[in-house]
Image (tube, rainbow, N blue to C red; front, side):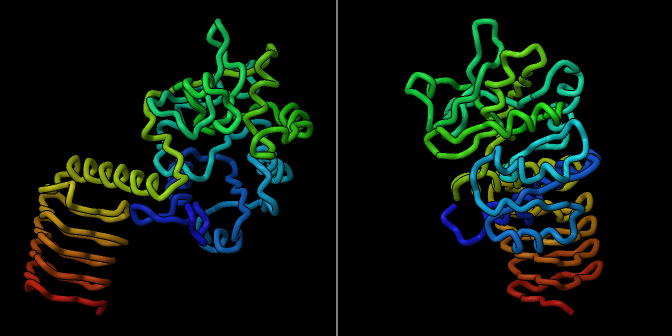
Length: 320
């Protein structure tokens, strides 16, 4: 990301990347959520003070397998879900579907989520045998030119169901690869040949499983979240005249029969009552907007606009 800010604390749609992910994990009602943190770990920990999360610290960033080992002392269940912290677009419904798939595979130690990408660059490639069984995952840096042509890739999401066997194999993984890291993906090759081995759940939504690694990825993910918010508003009876020029963050609440005109940005913990018309050219941050309100060409930050009010153009309203 070329930033002094930890990757998971970059914001889109009014939340950090990790908060979007935790928001998707929360409905799963897992026994415990453990976040492995490293770079500027105190900053990450402090930013999540409002979430029910346990933390394990990875002092040295030595790869995904090493990261999982840091949580070993806190993992009490024999089965557990592993999800990267940079997947802000994955949904609760997709995770539930994947967990259902994995738990129904009683004879499987590792279930993994895969997806087909027309441009698989940057992702680990899924290698299958002639029978269609997953045999290994080849990371981009270690792939041959032929392997790089494979379009089925690893999403980085796993359901691991035999803690004893997992820890045994993790302890013997080496770092003989282009990155010099301990790859969690090495477990696939180790278990694929066993009777109790590997099962892959292939999804058809590559957009949902975008890993945010660059500023370009961040921008793309932000647009996807905004589009989802627009669809949610449409479904609830709100008119957005031009979704392409309108930004509404995820926590904003707008009641039915309101109209949002172009070039409007609505952020933070804003609420807008029914039958209001907002825009064009309006910015609202943490505003409390009543019913039958009209606002255009104005800025509202932390202020309340009561019912049946019209805000004069070019006004700036602050907290009151």
